[in-house]
Length: 165
Image (cartoon, rainbow, N blue to C red):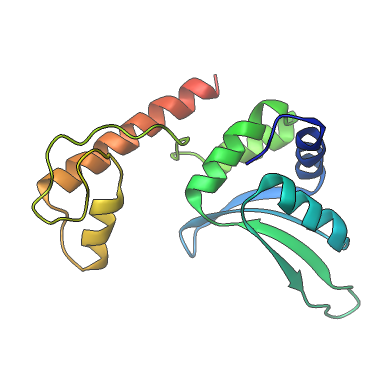
């Protein structure tokens, strides 16, 4: 995502002018998007950023069709938001901060020393993956998966607030 060159500055400018980031409380996810009528600009933005997808929105009433670049994966949003945050204006910085309250930037994985009995996680990782799999199955996370998730979220919180001070 985002290479350090002139293209990077162009993409940051496009997001500053046309971009949007918000939390969709109904679906409990985050959305980062850029919408405009120019297909070539959106596709160029997508090529530079390297994540998300490009969608054509149908025309309705008196409006023309729109092109939209959109990302809904939380890790991709956090990584991208942390890279562009220092270059944004005050209004956009506030919008990013408000949208991501309680979420944390991408960090290096730590080593998991104990393998949980459930088998949802591998030795050598710390993430929320194990606890999420338990929840999907309709059960409470095992002790190791729950502790792993707490560590994971605690570290993200520290890194996010350290990066944005």
